[in-house]
Image 1 (spheres, rainbow, N blue to C red):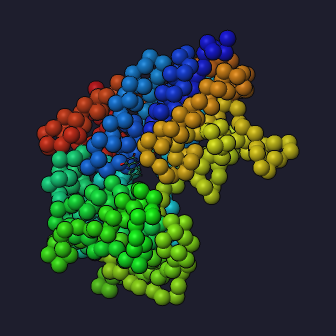
Image 2 (image 1 turned 180 degrees about the vertical axis):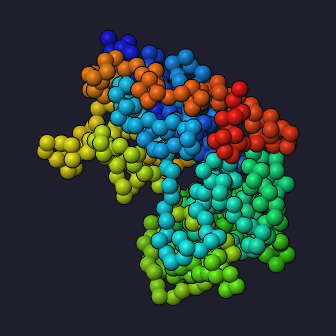
Image 3 (image 1 turned 90 degrees about the vertical axis):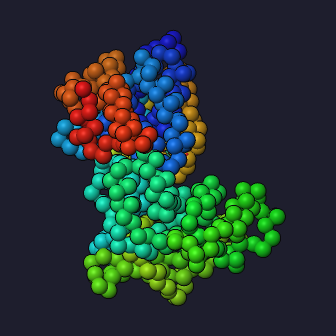
Length: 486
Ligand code: FAD
């Protein structure tokens, strides 16, 4: 009977985690009805606002998401934020408690909206220092990142702190030929600034060495292939002399780093380097213009075993200074708890930045809610699940987010079929989903973006792109997105 019983699930967030979990649940429980809530008027999360514009093939997963959204059992509720205050007055916010009263299950897949800080002097006070998250959001047209307007016209030396793939994305966008970028869906506001850019030297700085770096070979290769861009070479002492004994993937990465570029540093207009074994100490103001960053001080670090990918690292007393006309911190994204989590008993692990869960995506009950606190394995909170970056932490590509979302989807289906308890709706009767939520919060039709309306935005953006020779010109404000809806 449970196999056929109506099942309603709310999904919070329309990135890969939300869509892949919805897909899994809907294909295994054909009667499932899914309402997906998205804070922005536009779907796809970091596929739209994170993935680099010169990686269009990565965005092909949107076809699958479109297929999911075209099911009659799926409803997109865009421009509606769960818990958080909205972007603008016309933006609708739904308290968590209201949402949970109208579903059998709620899935949190809202990603990571903040970033980790360095907590060093100058970080908060000096101009010219950006988080990679904001910079990426800026060139990808995220409505919240329009105000940063990095001034690239006075910057020759750029420092990026962090050595993951996001750091390499930032480096590539700074170094890439502007005419290549013009043909991508990079936002016009970024193109205008990048066209004025004088950046010719990019330092990608890490606390550890190449053997410990988080980036992957594809991103390194892309940088090595940029025309007119030289690589300064890696410190040979940080890479084993004989690569043959290394695991295949590491060996290939080290080969690419060692080979470097054919372009020579002295003859190329632009260059980049991996600056290893440096831990940020302070940003220092420019001599002429003290309110703007001019250099970054680093402690030199020492690896216990440079060839061990897990080597520990310690700070020494030695310091060095790198000129930095502009600086980026790229040390990771961070998820935060939604307002209302504590009220409904959802536990958020502040340290790891995840919804506390059993590893399979079942949110676990806050011990504060239990008569007898259980320290090690708090029981699952019935009907509450999580997937993606808010479940595992902000790492992993779309493929790993997909398999993780499938794991959560399987847990939902298994629990439903086994008759496990779900959200208690004794106050509201059968789950009526979005229709009932809409009535509760008195949402107005012009505040909500449906899937068909997103399609209108999509078409308008594609049409705008066409006139500029780009696949798409994104709207960069909520107002413009909404006003393109007929
Ligand atoms: P997200 O994609 O962040 O989606 C979360 C969604 O939830 C967002 O749409 C957000 O607006 C919404 N939301 C947030 N709060 C609320 C709320 N309160 N109410 C309603 N909605 C809310 N992977 C690759 O495979 N290839 C790449 O080239 C690649 N490049 C990347 C580049 C960057 C800069 C970054 C940061 C990541 C990149 N990734 C790449 C990784 C990939 O983007 C992630 O693995 C994936 O997007 C994580 O999915 P998610 O659904 O957990 O989160």
